[in-house]
Image 1 (cartoon, rainbow, N blue to C red):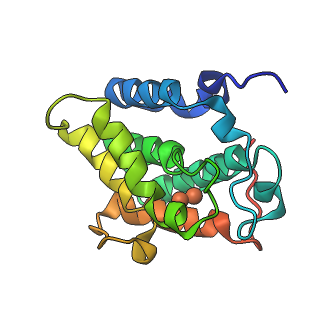
Image 2 (image 1 turned 90 degrees about the horizontal axis):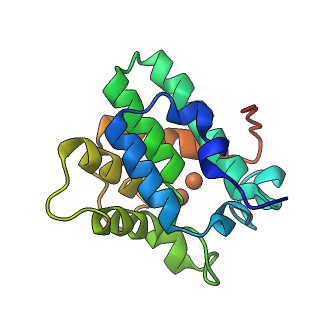
Image 3 (image 1 turned 120 degrees about the horizontal axis):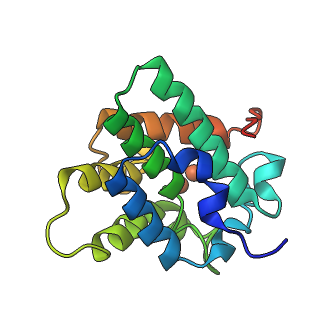
Length: 174
Ligand SMILES: [Fe+2]
Ligand SMILES: [Fe+2]
């Protein structure tokens, strides 16, 4: 497969985002190697598809798909939907590298992603960007190393991530 064009890969998701969230997404996608999406999402957990090549991409697309369903179910408004979907695309962006299966990366990858987002902006984050960052940081729920803040959107993302990671669940996202 040629180098992934992530703006194309997430084209359907991107059209639903607000301008600010689209800008955030592009900033982050441009700052991480596209190889991140090619590696397995996990070698121990997740479905067979997630454990294969491009598993990260499959897992992320699955989480986004479930978030879309939850967004409809709970009738999220445009801004809330945009926060949830942006956070879903970015939630595992820092789950890569040599130590990816180490307990360290497994537990701190949400905070590494949060740090990455905060570094891309100067000063205090605007509320709409902060909410994406908090949802990403809290996506491990009770498995977080810090106490999750329990925001509704962070909880929805955590739920979608848990369902998508269950080996008995297959999500069609095309
Ligand atoms: Fe994660
Ligand atoms: Fe995940």
